[in-house]
Image 1 (cartoon, rainbow, N blue to C red):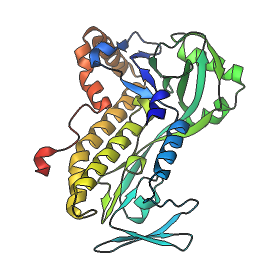
Image 2: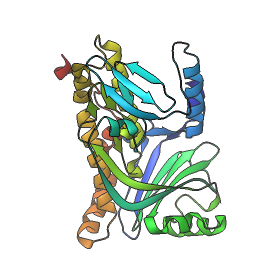
Image 3: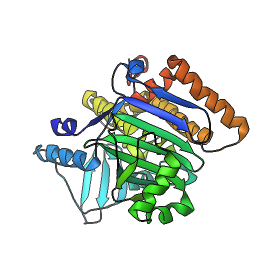
Image 4: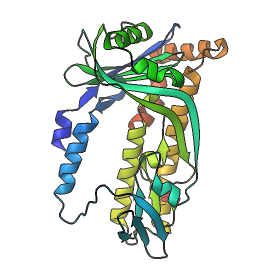
Length: 329
């Protein structure tokens, strides 16, 4: 994974502000002892993973096929594909995104909340060095996040009202940058360049229990979060790591007990991360005075008393035991 590390940009400081209000906080490396996280462009991750998978001769990969049915039998599960092929295994892992066909066919119940917002995603460049600082700016229409990338660029997540997303994304580069500057301010400098812009609707999807007979959903197939805290991918990686570890130690892959062990390890993290992310969205996406004053006092307090932000940092970075040792013993 050295190729990924070579293109990873650390986040060493996070500046949080609330447009139009006095509150603000700066989270610094001294609070955590190391970088808060690393930002890597997905295209680079995809290339490395594809090359790594190709090196395992025991793996069979299928391309340009879709799952059409699941036959869940006592000792195995059969995956029926649209090319006429049926693949049998002891366990089916649904890692097929928020519109998961695995989740649907396995009848894993889920709920969807629409935030009535969309995120405009692109890379931008400013006229001064980012110095590994990430920015989170809360506005009336939603947060604006700037995450440091290599080559002195930022990855931008610009949340806007759903009905305005296409209009804003289709602005000329100069018009888009001018509007972004007005919304975000000058903390990061002057916005000078923007790349291709994509639009993603913002929803909260969650499953009560992402399990079915010999089937488990992970990542966005089990939970799709608002990008406000950048936790969706991290939560999915923790799903993957815990599942792989439990599979490796199991002598009955896909069994009820194995899947139950997995969920006992993951349930608390799922609920805590979803609650934290959703709460941030709802607290900072409205401008009622009864809420705006306390939240800004909270931001100021975090700046004056850094220990107050420790629980948020630990949850965001996954700094806790991923395995429920007591229940697994």
